[in-house]
Amino acid sequence: MRIGVVADASCDLPPEFYRDHGIDILPVVIRIGEQHLVDVRDPQATLRFYAEQLADKGVDAETQPLPAEAIYTRFFERIVPAYDYVFCITAMASRSPMFENATKASFAILADCKPARAAAGIAGPFALRIVDSKNLFSGAGVLVAEAAKLARAGAHPHDIRRRLDELRENICGYMVPGDLYYIRNRGIKKGERSVGLISYAIGSALDIKPVILCYRGETQPVAKVRNYERAVERMFEHVARQIDHGIDTGHVCVSYGGDPDYIDQLPGYPALAAAAQRNNIEILRSLMSATAAVNVGAGCVAVAYGGELRSFGE
View (tube, rainbow, N blue to C red):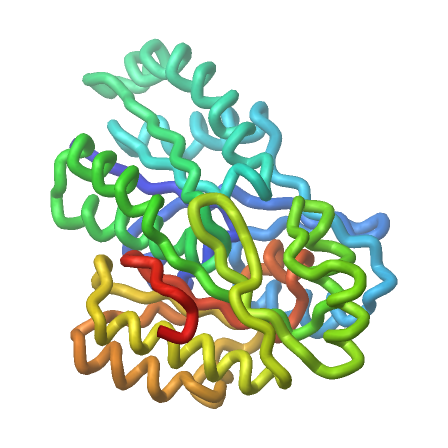
């Protein structure tokens, strides 16, 4: 059986991981004034977006996930002929319409796939599972990477489904924004209220940065730290301790809103890398998507793993 994995463009994984595991991408359209950028996780296009367009805070940028009709078309062009069972994993439904749109499209896809496959000479049924990752960015990456690894290992679709349903309830995603402006004024459009008006004013004046937890479809600040570098360091050190305690995935996802080579220089990252090496955990490092950047801004750092949620700092 040919098992495929599809992820929306906000899911942060390295481009080589997408390529090597044959993961297809559901694009997200970014509207920038009168211009439109289609986010398909092209690293060069994303870096140009960070450098040339994101810096202007006055730009009214918005993200527009694919409508159901476009998802239907993309599946019949690229997915239905290539696979027999597909897992389509999206960003948390409480922050993005992609899950709802993909779910709507799935009914029509499943209704129409049999005659289309028969006409193409493809025998056997087609199955599709739409999965709300209940997380964002690197957190969604943890779930997509798990699905792709299991598919490559030849796991049965029902075993993959059970594993994803279990894992998505236990993905701990953390992020530190580089600029509170985006969390306050743009992220709020997606329901992100981790930084209120008073917190924004005080945080901007005193350089206080929140460490935001993404977990089970919700986001909340778990710490407020003076200075961006110290906040990032505390976040990485916390995840390093979780790795030493024991996590439930063989990988940790890290993404950065800028050149991913800069991750090596981030405070606290050496401790994370050392813990991962001690415990034989793979670190999947990537450039944070342009879609994410519209909502959290440049310089945001995110890290996620699958495992037990413990109090921040433990």
